[in-house]
Image (cartoon, rainbow, N blue to C red; front, side):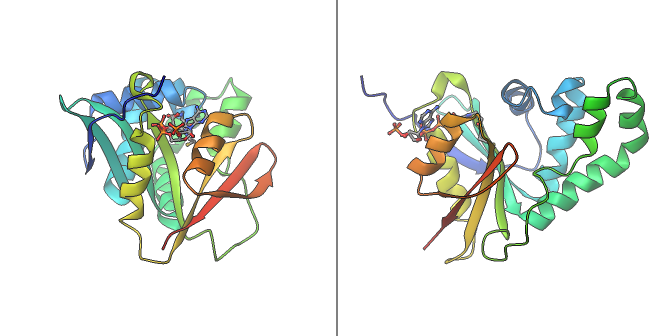
Length: 193
Ligand SMILES: CC(C)(COP(=O)(O)OP(=O)(O)OC[C@H]1O[C@@H](n2cnc3c(N)ncnc32)[C@H](O)[C@@H]1OP(=O)(O)O)[C@@H](O)C(=O)NCCC(=O)NCCS
């Protein structure tokens, strides 16, 4: 059966709604930030909303059903670093008895990779769609809206985990090519016209 496309509008936000905080925590439940209470995820997402491109998909009833965080990779990296710097002591104390959590909180994400000027400029850092509308074109709409924020002719990339086959198929279906694999992480790139 062919699924109907979802009727959504895409907006850029600067304040993160509760529904998006929850969608982040549910989708990226293994992300270290999701392992604390929702105030940490809210602060984490708020950093990107202030400094990067934060797009949200709203359905016809104005419910938030998806989001994308992207922009210049250097800005995304510095936003994350700023977030960690501000909460360094708190997070170090909170993860004191959990070496794995400590490592993932302070690790470089995605992993260190060879400099690649062609692809490392712009990046989609997070994209997620609510399960009740998945497979109905919302992720594709978010990517299209993100591409409209980029200079013509630029390229951008996104990382996925090797096990995330759905995300890999999603990127392929949207014109990305796999170009690099490091450890568990795979990078997909796309050149826009
Ligand atoms: C990946 C994700 C954002 C896709 O969003 P979506 O709205 O469901 O995707 P779309 O409906 O726009 O899909 C477009 C195409 O991608 C492919 N695709 C999307 N999800 C897929 C899946 N789970 N398995 C296989 N192919 C998939 C299909 O070819 C689809 O085209 P079709 O509907 O004509 O078959 C969503 O599944 C999600 O939130 N996943 C969890 C978070 C994640 O992995 N994010 C990426 C890493 S940050």
